[in-house]
Image (tube, rainbow, N blue to C red; front, side, top):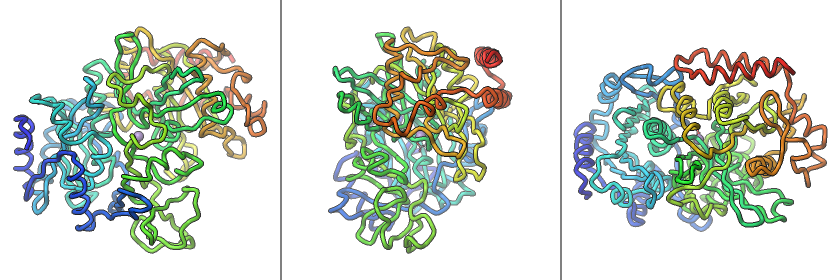
Length: 587
Ligand code: OXD
Ligand code: MN
């Protein structure tokens, strides 16, 4: 159907390996979507939801043992082990091609292979990139249609070039013993087998846009980051943009779609969403850093999404959305914990078992998802498909920290900012591991997503700083500070706007700050509290902005332990850490 020789030859080669009964080339048309949706319903792989309540929406359950990304089965396959670095699982390309090749051999017998061309980034942008994903899953095709610009548009973009990421996926038998997600950055290739869960199989997302993307970005002088992008429009109509990295499950989607508090809305402030998960950033002609969201949809965690926590996300999912592993009600509607509506009297849970509120089990899996078109988001930025992206004024790093990190601080400069990003960490919640309060280091929220040695990744960030004439300012934020009873003392959600406002005032040189051992911090009176004075009084704001010497001493020790495993840690990071230790010693 398509005429690109490199694509056709590679697809033929992969078909020879996987031996599908037939090959369907994906064009991205509406006719094709309707046909594949019907086919998925006929085979029982998916269901239509109530089309009156949720037009164009579908439902899917994954296998019970296939509900999340599998970091322990994710590999970076570089020729040299050191190039994958101390934080990635490594397999040699020979071993990986051999091992997975044996599994892929005949894996599509009796099945159809779908050949999906897709584009990461807007069609009009010279920075976009093409991938081809070969898969035996219709669910993958229908999700890729939402998450990427899929079909003819990608092949038109590719022309007769051979510069595309080669992705091969087979569900095989969904056996965790035969599940691997392998990346071959030196070959521009991804092989994923044995899973049907989004993050493992929608190859445009984490696998391409972050793991392969970060490898390409280092070679080509740009940044591929696990960051949301949002715009804040001021009452004069000027919009400033922020990119922010938080580990998974720290509320990136909520921040990206936040609704400013009443005092700010009344003044005329608005927040616009450009992306909720990934940013590709390049140096623009004006010397600033410009960011593009390479994705076309949101693959968001459903539980906890309500009209209170994130109305914009909920409204985005009202049509043309695929719901995975949420609860299904008898009238073909969906439900999840934290949706803000009463639990249904009866439902089928994410496993497909009868469920009632008395069951004592979760109806939706905690990692159940919606796949929704970004263009449907009520606050989608008018610039979200801009070919050159949007200019970034500030970068935020953050995580869940009960005590150590204050509400916000600004790095002294880019190099210090890279150190702040490199020392990012989040404390585990009971749900995740059973151990509460253990810090999991997650530099720039890229630990599971960096496609090469993380020491080299820090060096790349440092090198970029030297090349950007007018770099964004770098900040650290923490919405998760608690009091002695373990209660959050900052209200979060839309109220985070108050911190963002301080950040942008700093970027515009409109406000000064206190210089502290860890960076520049707001004067308590510079965080606007109109409307939340009762909840966040003077004592609380001072607490939110305090630095506890002992916790920071323990923090520095923990950072040193983490950095101890790096063979290629740039000197600048060690120098920054020594500087922090020395400054802390003086307070
Ligand atoms: C995601 C993740 O799904 O970071 O975006 O895990
Ligand atoms: Mn993510």
